[in-house]
Image (cartoon, rainbow, N blue to C red; front, side, top):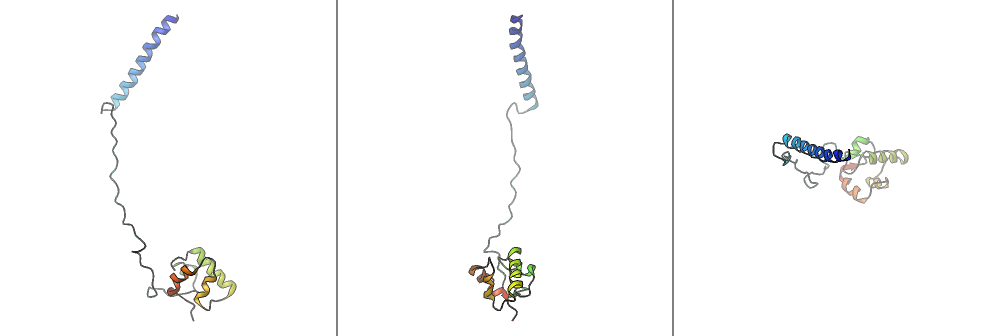
Amino acid sequence: MKIKVLTVLPILTALFVGLTLGLYLGRNPAGGSVTVSLPAPRQKAAAVSPETVPEPTAQDAGFPVDINTADAAELARLPGIGEVLAQRIIDYRSTYGSFTAIEQLTMVDGIGEGKMEAIADLITTGG
């Protein structure tokens, strides 16, 4: 009985390998080689560099912004001032009262000399 099993086993293995290869090659018309095609590359949008985006100036509509009366949306239009910093300005104004000079804006946490220089021409205290 062991002799029959040892004789039949290699025949079955060869048959299995042959069928598997036949199925693979039959489904692949290129004869075993695989061809990969890639989609054409997309055209990238032109990158906008900081030099090409003009900074707002006092002549732009809505400027200067009165830091004593502006709401968060108006303050957030200023360069470098986001929603969080705009809310800090409003909170500071509520706690300490109106700003008497634009330089007092540096007292708000997150506004340093550099940010102050960037927005100085775009803000006013209304007075």
